[in-house]
Image (cartoon, helix red, strand yellow):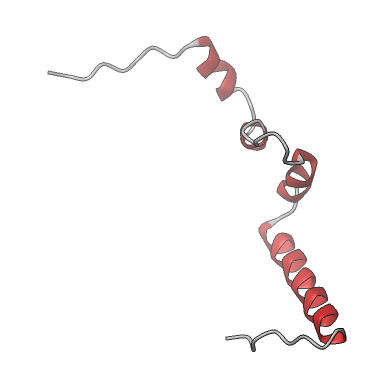
Amino acid sequence: MRDRQAEPTEADTFDAEKSWDQRILERIPSGVDPSLIAENLRLTPTERVERMRKALEFIEEAKAAHGHRLPAHR
């Protein structure tokens, strides 16, 4: 017995017309700021990694200034 493929619904067709980032952003739970996610989605993966690296560097500097030390990088 063969499984039947369901016919695409109007919602499926509408969803297929959206860009990949629109489909991601519409699934964000309430209480999360989608503008921050949208901003990061506009960056390249390399730009995102660089942004995270700079944030970690800032955190390390702030902790060091207050006498905290982070474990050494592996």
